[in-house]
Length: 266
Image (cartoon, rainbow, N blue to C red; front, side, top):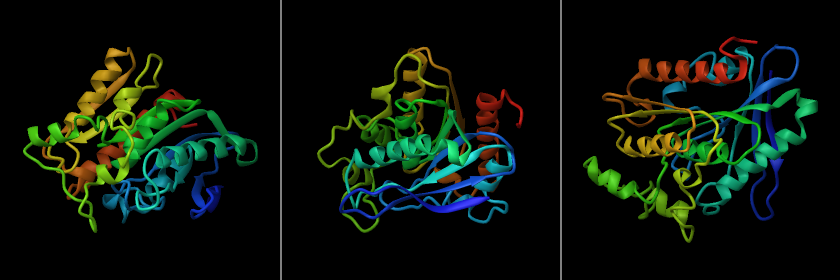
């Protein structure tokens, strides 16, 4: 069952903020996956799991629902609409709406996995470090330390690229007057943070894998559980590697199962 275009917030002066909710036939309150899409904070939609999954049937959302989860895939304001922290505020508003409607939607909001890819991985990490009820975070190749991103790009032999249709980088469009440290998940790591699964390609052309290493190091230093997987030859969004995309999904599903069901489907 999928319920589309559920309005979770209405910010004056902006478009309605929407989510899609997918769930299977499992009876009783279902643990919740909150999925946050990528797109450099500038483009993207709640309908996309990433380009390598566009032809999957059943879709990744349907597969998660069949595994016993309810899946809320959320939109948020893009950088052409508002700078940071609007994007994080919107994801938090979606969490609040889901908690408020947990009874009628039959959701277990004490078992939440927040999962994101790229810019959505960045927002998922931030949300996972501050939202109640989060038992695990899945972060695919998300920026983690915006204060060090330029240095990490240079170390990898890369330079920050302007966002499509702009002369500014994606990060500059996100931040505007916001502090790069405030917008960085590494800054917000704390004792008692939920377990993290970090998946990243070593040949990522947009977000160097050093960013996930930095987050893993911060989580480890805080005493939190973290599973960092770096893949040889893998590019951003698993581009061109369908087998790796499937592997990343399977690893992430098993991680979510472990922390919600003890490794077993409900």
